[in-house]
Amino acid sequence: MTAAKHQPLPLTPMQTEVLGGLSRGDKHLPSKYFYDAAGARLFERICELPEYYPTRTELAILRTHLPTISKQLGPMRWLVEPGSGSGLKTRLLLEALDQPAGYVPIDISDAQLKAYAQDLRQGFPHLNVRPLSADFTADLQLPEGVKKPVIWFPGSTLGNFRPADAQAFLRRLSRWGGGAGELLLGVDLVKPVEVLEAAYNDTAGVTARFNLNLLRHLNHAAGCDFDLSQFRHEARWNPQIGAIQMFLISLGEQTVHVAGHAFALASQEAICTEYSHKYTPTQVEQLAHASGWSLRNMYSDPKNWFGVFHLEC
Ligand code: AVI
Image (cartoon, rainbow, N blue to C red; front, top):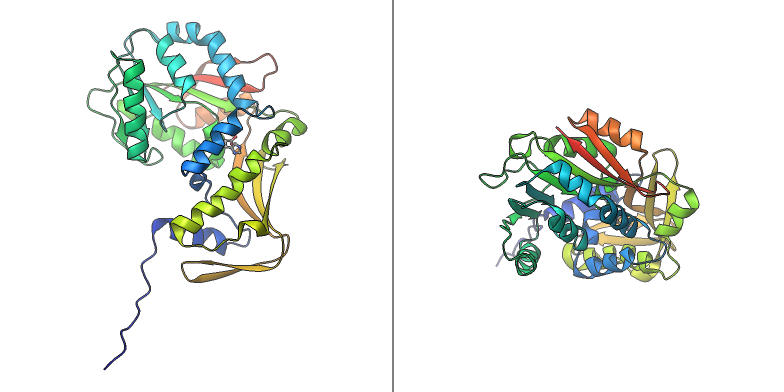
């Protein structure tokens, strides 16, 4: 009798990404995996923390300026949102728009998207909601008939892209629906370091739990064996790149495994888990220009902490 040969199982895309990130000299883990169900709940709590100013600042800007923005957009526009469910902000925008032609939320998670669309239809019974299940960072086709859309990308999610990726993404958006659309883009602005670092190192420790939850998610979903008690959260401003970087710091020497591959971590070695780039208004304008957009208007708060940029192709 011959012994059955064990073929290694093919790697999932998630495992491939994790292996790639941990194989680098400066170890990284992909921040998109923060958002399992527990991570999404923790992020909602972050948005309400006293130190985390972006959500309430952007909301205040919208409450003040939506009537003007809506007038400039005019009637019967399709609203398209890459990444469904920025909740209250989207509802405010939908309420402010003059007879929106419809709303297209786009998300990779089909279940989340369907639940969100259903919920929204209850609040806006006359709205044509056409959810699109897709990876919004890749090339995609909007539903038939959705032309010259108003694309809504709030929350400074753009800041989580590296600048070159942000530019490529904005360029892709400029082609959606055949081009000639408009973009409402929420971007967190450069501000004093103390304010920025406090926002990502909150005293209640919610951001630390959000960061560590990434390891829990990867343990379940990618077959890793991270011991959460052996890492601590840290977030710091990197002036060279203009970004807050979040890290998980190894508390001692340890070995972690991913799909049968071992990675040694030195004591105090950092794994970067997130970039959150902050921009000046001029930098946003330059980024927009470099990707086929021009600035119609920018709306900000009295401290200039956050900007809602109205761009057109
Ligand atoms: C989703 N994104 C814009 C958040 C940010 O501020 O970069 C994610 C986050 N990470 C820690 N706190 C919030």
